[in-house]
Length: 340
Image (cartoon, rainbow, N blue to C red; front, side, top):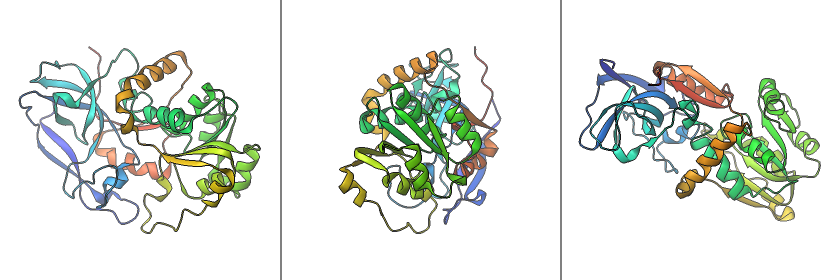
């Protein structure tokens, strides 16, 4: 164990795009677990776009952090001290803990991670919250049918990459939108997307979506918002379903642009728009976990992780999300895990 516990706190609220000055790394004693609590050493920590909303003092689906508060994240860690009959030292667990080397957790705050099923970091990605978000958002909200055209924005991210592969497995034609040639090649190569559009080098997104989806978009899975979504709305098929999962293009806007600007398309196409929050499906998590694990095991679903080494570099990993530097799931490796 380390002699001290490093923790990242919210130093100040950002105006527009966050900077490293918004974060402060502090050190204190490693905490002691109380009754029915455990001490968890962080092995991997997640950074996710939704965390930007927790940095502002405004109501959202995730409670905002106070300035000076230790920031929270999805964590995969190892129990190093236990006062709980449910957990033993050496158990690998997943929970919403802290941007820290160590965290104390209530025994019921954690779920077990099986190190033999897949690398433990996948509990933060394809076999965790992003994978479940893709699963329920596409299958329950998007309701894809064989032969449908599914358009996915943020397609090379943790959620979008899984959405596209599940859609292919469901018999759909899949088009992804991403921001780099490397990502486009990954989507159409290893992941099996039918087509992909590099929005960063495409002058007319509306025309590019029309060319890639000549029969219209039956399901649009939106992780981005902004001009990409405008282009998708202009190309919806009759009875299309739009799944709103994320709006990362707007998260740092100091003034939200006027909109939505394309609602007229919903009239002519009789389309439906619905948001998705994975926590609404908590009673069905095991269903998603089992199917995703099977698909990963048999190769139906491939995944990538972008791993940043060191807790001290966690803010850089988070800020990189807004530049699209990650391919697949962005995680921070905080300490080395050595299977028992």
